[in-house]
Length: 161
Length: 386
Image 1 (cartoon, chains in turn red, cyan):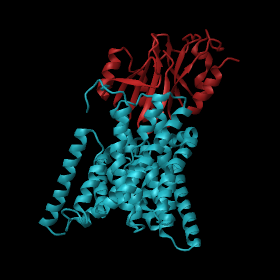
Image 2 (cartoon, each protein chain N blue to C red; image 1 turned 90 degrees about the horizontal axis):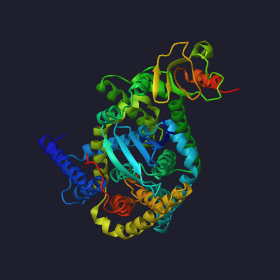
Image 3 (cartoon, one colour; image 1 turned 135 degrees about the vertical axis):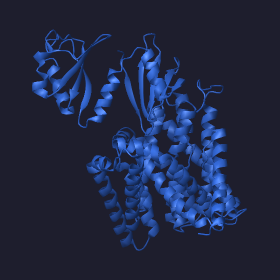
Image 4 (cartoon, each protein chain N blue to C red; image 1 turned 180 degrees about the vertical axis):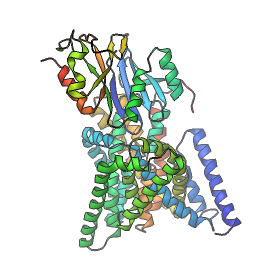
């Protein structure tokens, strides 16, 4: 996945920006009302944008499905909202991480931090509900569920050195 | 109540608001200036002064003021407030300096005395977050790089309001130097107490008030709102401040639902509030206030454009973006009227009402127009308007 910048728009919502493979800067404005705006920046003026599309809440979901995005991330976000104190996060596993090539069980994430690894994202593939024997690789992204504190601790555990 | 006469009069007023809201929607303008004009036409010394519905409208206006500030407080989460202060307090200070000074100076030059001049400074300072958010959306500027800077300035202005209102209201009550000092300390204590409660118990209060029933939630929120507003008013800190702070208390799902539940109520009562402000201004005083209002509006437009330009330049944004940021900020509206309304209600300075009305009428219309002009001509949004 490309690097996505998150820019808060106080009182309005959040804007997410990224640069496409072809070098176009694209943004999606999430309005609090549920409206989504798809925006394209001018190539010769990085400050100025053109809005391409305005999507209602349902339209946004439809477009996402058509573009092939799974619902997983969204469902997790809903889970996070429903259970207070529960955080869902993505932790990158660096190439130099001590767990490159090790099994998930070796991280002892649950015992040490109380955090569960609920999915592993590798390139375009998602591996939901991996078992303890699942072998991790540098460059993986781990989708984790736990307390915010526990997730911070796990991030430290996964770091090289 | 007066039976049929009361209902007919109130119905007529609301019919007028309905027509004006429709006209504003049709031409893509803020309805606020139209409501003010209608108030001028039907208030004291106007074309058709109201006889029976005026007391009801006065009470409605008071609720409108409270709802306006409450939704302002609801608008921002504590995190957004903190972020805005961290990133934009410098620009916020420049904004305050450049835009408060003209009003204050004008007030002093007109021989009004310090307290009404402070209020006029507040009127010229504060941009209209409602009108501006709408302009940004209409022109498709939400994606632009300067937009977060504009929004951060608006957040800071609203925070300044939270400090300004209790301070100014205390000055309005007046009394000896000692009494003023005591009142200011008291006001500061009240504000700090409520903010502490918001930070500590905000989530707990939100959970307690939250309900799956719209009805239960709405009554719960209104109860907290009116009680806070009433308590702060009793302590001479202005109900408006209490309402703003009450808005900050709510967070999470309770705030999200409250925002949408309150929209219709707020529209009705805020419309009444603007209308009532117009009622209180004698249209005969407008021609006299117009030259000063026009001059102040021109200065106010220039100082806001300068503010936006400086903010955008500090943010590393190019010329076009700086101009956009400046023109977007020009619009004044609801909160200028709120500030003027508090002073007028206290009988501070008879000329403040008409002057503020002229100022807001001019800038609420010209601000969005200016923004439209600097936007590249011929650009149309891809999708149809709502």
